[in-house]
Length: 446
Image 1 (cartoon, helix red, strand yellow):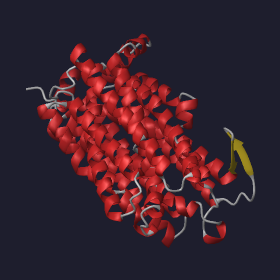
Image 2 (image 1 turned 135 degrees about the horizontal axis):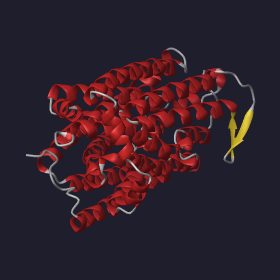
Image 3 (image 1 turned 120 degrees about the horizontal axis):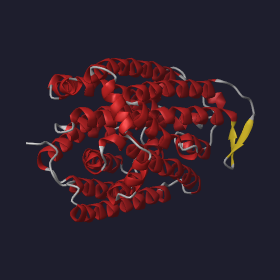
């Protein structure tokens, strides 16, 4: 009976698209908060007498990478996947949203409290106490942020398998990018017209909206089960031995390596892009965030479109390869000694296309090689390894910008990282032909 109800709800378009909107809203709020500090680098590095915190570029680079510290060094992202597969989507999602709220409260405390000249040495970095506390908050937030990501991904697979999975994931990604774009666009103007802490207060309000949205999802997901038996059964099906099966899958490793390189060339870049627009292209600081937001804004329409293409026509790995090559060209373009703001806009537009192509096809590929019962663990391992790049790259880039303020070195770092992703994607195409994963086949079953 429970399975019949589940199947009926799963096949009802209104129900599954309502679920998509609800969980995507929670994810969107998390993405907003993740990037809300990115346009504030110039303000954070300003002296306290001018309303800043007196951070250095290395301080900001450390803070930018801190969102991955607990996930990577304490293995929390890996454990998040185990929690998801054992405890279920509802429990894990509520835990994740709560951690994002707690982490943001710590960040707010770090940037609003006067610690005087107090400093602390962390991982070899001599940091002001404001950086230390804000980084701790960002680390706690990062646990909830990544946990939310894998939870939403598994929810999409559960509700949309056999239907418009890539389109649903594309729309979810588009709404997440809307959160990023909004943060890049409005954070600096809010801080300049109010206080440096005001964007974080806005972030707290948005996270509470996301938490409430996920509570609504929990009600609908319980109806999907009709009782607790369905989700409990799915949890009991997972065995720790399934981890070994996942680790022996070559497709899993290729997708993982691609994610490490591709997202290391995108997410950290966006955190530095606002200052890049100011320092290299002479863009006014009040509108520089809008230049940076071109990429996430562009993905809002294009990611669902490319997802629909994959659903109907296939060619998933081809889309991934194309996106990685476009990203490579963009970063090498930014490394050239050209200082026209028109060129900067053009490169950001191209980046937005590549940033749409690859994720739209990549994430729906994962359920084709990993069974649902251990999908949460698989996603968590992918995100866990991916976080190494997101933690390390900002530190290298922050120091590179201190020694080379022209941004040539940092853009070359991003460019070769993206090129590595393109080569991995080509290998993925070859392995798919050997193993028959069906990554090039359409998602909609006819």
